[in-house]
Length: 122
Image 1 (cartoon, one colour):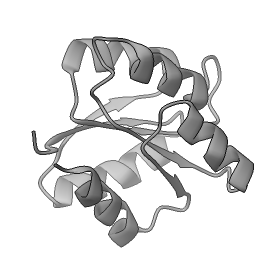
Image 2: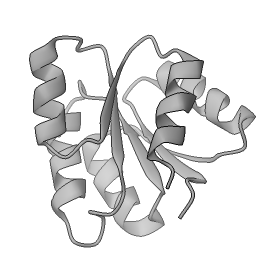
Image 3: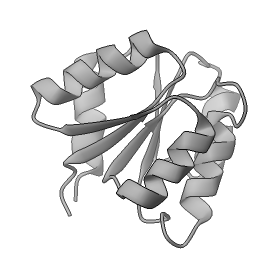
């Protein structure tokens, strides 16, 4: 199924807006969540084709939310792409072990983001 609907998860309204504008300009339907808890609820309810997940958030962090989404039978088919300021190799490895399909470091490069989305599109 092609990627059309993307859930952007970030506690920063500015980051949500910037990423959302990039995606909307390329024809994607964009949903938003500002916490890990909301991301899990929206993934279950709205069934996006992709989740772009920040890591550093209050409450459930992005690693925990990614693990919950990718290990739940209702949402395990939804790929998660981590988008974070955490740029250490150990962070990337840990994120992938939680079920993320790929990892982007902020600030987000629009061409790189779109390339990674395209690579996940079957």
